[in-house]
Length: 270
Image (cartoon, rainbow, N blue to C red; front, side, top):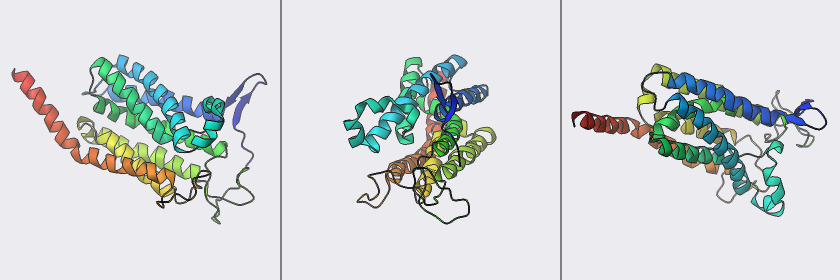
């Protein structure tokens, strides 16, 4: 399609769409987080939100890259360790990024004495922005393309051979971006979900897990991971515990709220 992964080339400096996608996702996510915490009952103040940007960014970059290295191409990076730091060429694992971001939130919440699960609820509402932009960047980079297909909107990717393929990056962009955002938007602004610790982040990882599991049926497996012995792709394998964990958080959210309110009531009486 003639798309260039480089957004700006000054010769001595290159700015890639992939990098801009992360910057845009983090910036817009931070802006939206400030809108969320302005509502009554927020689990953190503005100063905590500013700190959260740093911890979340660190978790996304380190967790996402290390997750990709360990889950998808361990042998390659073992032989080429210098390429681990080349983030601008792509190669990030969402599942690793979730782990890294969760650890960052845990650290920040413990440092400031905050309820980490409620903080995680708010951060989860902001994540679809980054997912949307990064999936679009995956498409521009002509990476993570789909399986061969004959659908009218199929695309021939530069490194995908002379065969038309599913633009699976765009499927994921829509499902993980606008669709997931609207679900979380409705729960946050139109229900009392934000007062039920774990319900929003549970919904996030459940919907993401289901979307990713479904798209994996038309997405080309990563090189070397085409025929896993248990019948699932690596993406489906990593999404399964997310689906189960999301269901657990949603089902137990109301009970968790009642326990928090009970403790608060006892403290006010004392």
